[in-house]
Image (cartoon, rainbow, N blue to C red; front, side, top):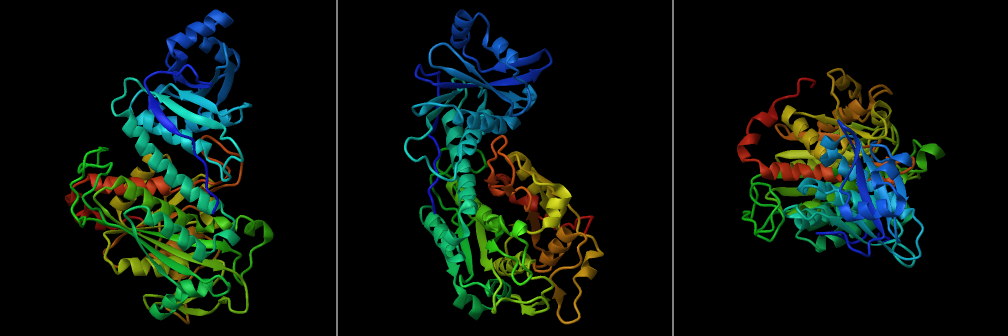
Length: 533
């Protein structure tokens, strides 16, 4: 797998004299648009040389307080100024990630004979420092590293009055690396990231952290009866894999204290946490549709069908870097869905890992089969909460578009936790119901279940199918990320074209939220059925 490049990001007390590009924010206030973060000496020098202030010049060039809108000013000397819009000054904490990402993409487009030194000067508090650092790194991500010199030598976030600014920056770098790692896996061509190679890549990353791993090869999958994973992977010469990642907090130097607050002091985590979170990811490294063959148009981007597994792997690794007091297990169900003489057929009956028989209605509805096996296996360890994430259905994309994930769950508090975690990550999710009538679509005359129903409500039917494999009295949520996992259009804000890394930060935040609360908050309340169920 190609190594990706990210620039060096640090905090500084003041703007360096050798800064090539200064990034400022234009915010909307009651008194009108206003630039924030502008050092007085820069504005004075600009006014002396140009006869107007930086703000006047930016507005004359068409700068707008619209999120991600950018203009570039040439300042005295070699300094260039990038002004990026943020819609409302009251939303700067929330919008800084996206705005900084847009600004850094603009910086990368500037012509220069040498690597640029960039200063960002609108980080006014701890949360903004975190968001700015994340946005800068996410906006700089490229699949291919620079051929010779990096376009950006360094990024300095100017935060002279922000307590623990360096710590905020360090935490952001951990989070951004996790998102970019998921992006890199998803962007890797499928011949270079087969199920076996993907499993090995994840194991390599796990070895560098306090994360244990276990890999099921095709022989072990056969012996232990993972019928869904084996059926889906049976048509390919690249055999399937199941990967288990396990983070169990130990007393160590981490970034999270007992209250869930960022801290550099030694944690007091017990050797075994009181809450066990299981994350399950769909990892179809290429999906041709099997015998239910996709069209060329629908097949061309199907290397991204393992984005759920990439998100789970990256999230577990990132959580381990934070070291919160919550046990986390990640399950990656990896297979390649290709047509051949050994491929599974529509109307085949498959015996799943938990013994349930499933009539295969469509060989292009393979994701739910590998997920069902992995969910069943994850449930044997009695986790408190199982969250699966998958590029599962085109129906979710039809319903919610390309930037919003569908959220299904079996408990009110579970959906609230996921919604809170996603909001803090800047990732959009929308709760969907699993309606009573959906159960009838899964009825089969030859098996316990049918894998899919008709063309209507496809995302709901898929979620209903997965719910059948969740152990009784276990909290569960399902994220269908078919839309937001892959950006088919132009880059925007901190989101590149192609793989987005969607879901990584939502899952990381979920673990941190769980670690921050007392155990009592989960007693009973999480098992209340959702009114829509």
